Length: 457
Ligand code: BES
Ligand code: MN
Ligand code: ZN
Image (cartoon, rainbow, N blue to C red):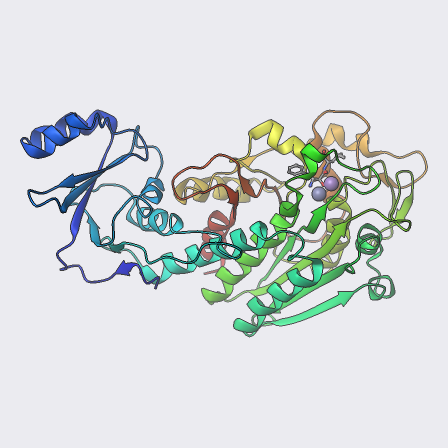
């Protein structure tokens, strides 16, 4: 369990009241006198994420008000950790939110990226709300923190080799097997597009392959885009677009964190995680616009733009994943700017042909406060990927539906998986919210964990 949680429910701990703006008046009548006056004095209105410390006569904190605004954010407790003085706290009686999410929100609010500056702090302690499994909250928070750390680490310390090392640590901690195919060996073992995208970089491209679990258990396979830095390649990005591209391994970070969750939960599944890890760089041997690449599947792929590199490395990894006919095949990738244009940074689209899966996922996304939105694999756009000289083009030549056409491209490499779902995540929080500081973010993994546990638990 995380060390800032207290299991002891009898502890005399300072109460924290969560109040919606419209409930504030009621709280003030119930706490007429100093409490209500202090609220007035401070102009506290119950705004979402606002914290008001209530003093006693000696100047110590006797209670805390946390504004929840319209009450729509179950992770609002993420505002507490950095606002509270050292001490022991509990959610006051009358708290009627989802207690596991409240505890998780608190935990997520303790995240700091301290690799280069600052150091881990001692956080105020929170008594775990009734009925909350502290181990579970700890597992979820540590998985999110793992992904955030990996994404926040700049490419100078998160090369394909570093990413493979991070994957090895996770694999070894859980007794999983890990195999890595590096550099020219990718050609020998028929991963031509992973090689083509990554060959211009100083650090060799590689395919990370983790396997865990009983061999004849249902196969769940994850594939994560591990572009450790995306310059755009010869179709170089402008600096405004390149600035954040250390996060282009966000899919790899998310799938690695999800794999960690699944292994720690000890599910009876045959888990496989494939991460093509490359840097999309510029050099004399870089792949070019107009090139035709051989893919692992055998399809020839015409390159329209070297900045659409993610789908190429995913296609080879998906081909390998699909060859085992997994029961569930999930890929996650910071794949398109178009996904962000459509839904913004906080609501990742996902694509699947399976209506049941989509319905179940929408349900758990809501329940876990890990929002996701289904978008269509719109068949009529599939011929936008037609090429005059190759089996397929990896991009369409128009400006429309970029996230959809990327998903349609990936779908061409999946035939045998019973269920396939593709997640076009942003992997980054540009505007902070409680529990979600600016920086790398592990989108979709808590919802997926819940869904996989329900299906295979
Ligand atoms: N990694 C980017 C997509 C991206 C950009 C994700 C910004 C999140 C934020 C991807 O490799 C890319 O460059 N995609 C291009 C594709 C285009 C050339 C068809 C894009 O979306 O512009
Ligand atoms: Mn790109
Ligand atoms: Zn990219």
